[in-house]
Length: 509
Ligand SMILES: [Zn+2]
Image (cartoon, rainbow, N blue to C red):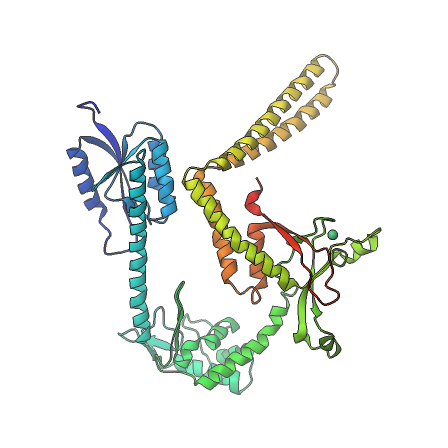
């Protein structure tokens, strides 16, 4: 660097919106950084904002990246690396960006030149340490909270019927607690349904805390809250459930509370039946031979169950191609039936979920490759862009031929107009597709994979049997279709093998 040449750097300062002990005020960061800049003969531009280290789309941060692309800056200056991001993948993307723009990264302790591989390695470690620190802090906060809960501290607003004392413990509210007792009594001991209970409460002038009449929705919340039994039940994200018995005075005894839950469970069966027909794999399985989408139905697995119509012995079965057809399609069907055989649904589900599990590893590999600079996804996008541009240009030629034809008297005026209008519509379509492809950069590609990962992780951890509708929706979010083929029938009672192939949504350009 020639003497006298002043470097131009982008100073980036950020403060988290959360109050944590380590957060340094923006003014303090600025003071340190401008000092540093002056000592090191640097001119600077300041980018300052409040925001989370986990959010990549911070406005000022994004504006800074855009500015840095102008090729007038020498680098970025921050107090430390985690001002940029604490996320390891995001930091990898930042390094990639800095490398591509040939920019230096200055922190108060060290200057990084990413063209130098060792620096990339060191920042990788730094980022890991920051992550570790974040996890530790979160764990500490969580531990404190668990301790408090165990001592009977109630987090959040006191439920109806209770008030909170100075130690944040629940105490029975003099009037509200009577109403809660009444609700349980009417429901459990007097056999009233929730609408009738609400009617009674309104008649006697009882109101909710907001001064409104009780509705079955509010009484339902009261009848299902375990706090009234004196228990604190708490679920922290990613942690075990914490249950503390006798945390505060109960408003109803345990047996009354449990009876209420039994009654509620018995009544709930009615609306759940309305969901009948949506299974975990609904509208996903396709026959590769005839293209039929395969349906499901509940069947008696054993003859004994069928004979005494014991519904608990029914199991979910996949139907074969012909049986999957609608009544109308069956009537119209001629010729041979497809040779694809059906089987028990749980077998197929098991294989689909184990493949999803494998797919998680594939996604991790893809993300790592992109962060490391793999651009093969870009080349597939580029090919598509090329194809579309070619199509667009061909249509231009066609347009010209029509115009020439009109001049030469081959086309009538309205013929030519209609023809050109049709061509223009096709071109508009291509333009739209091209705009759609423009978003394909490393960051959005990584985000796409991350989103798919989160959904698959949710699927793998959830109880699909209890919530087939939700599981089915998530599956449709990540999977386009699953080809299913089974050569042999299970008719003799022995399950035969089958093949499946999953087509993921992200695989389609
Ligand atoms: Zn078929």
